[in-house]
Length: 199
Image (cartoon, rainbow, N blue to C red; front, side):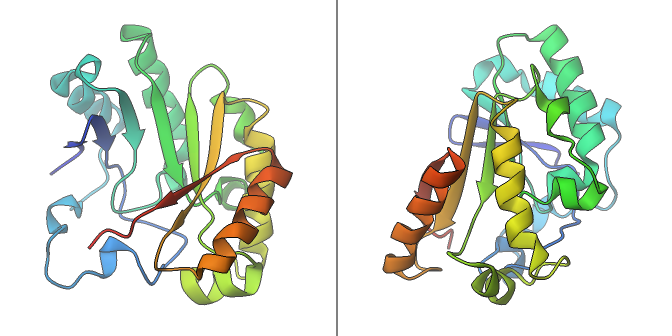
């Protein structure tokens, strides 16, 4: 079972297959099995997550990133617990969460304060320039509410986390919409990152 894996200079941590979205461009939709090793036969315990990170030695990497086949914040409290334990042993390790921004919708309350002093960066997949396109592209469990929910999550997260950013995937969104997304990011007080599609 692959929990911690290397991508570039980052140590990525894979903790769930579950996701509240079903995005059309997601690597989960690749049928050739290229990323099949990331599919978990079961969700690892917090102990297993921490042990896997320790074995990989997080000090060898620029940052540790909760990101895998699923949405890490469906296990938000486990992410926080694991991060606290890792920070206790490795206080200089930077920790990022790659998320769809649905955590507050999942738990029905604002969970962003729990990230203070624990999470260094939150990267939120914005994906589209409006709620209706988001539903078409991402097929969220929360419907139209999902888009406003992720914007609200970003606005709240930046009060507790040093770096918060939105991301969009080039080729999955019209170029003119990227500029609209840039304006949305500015209004939320966060940075927009434009990523290339993984093929």
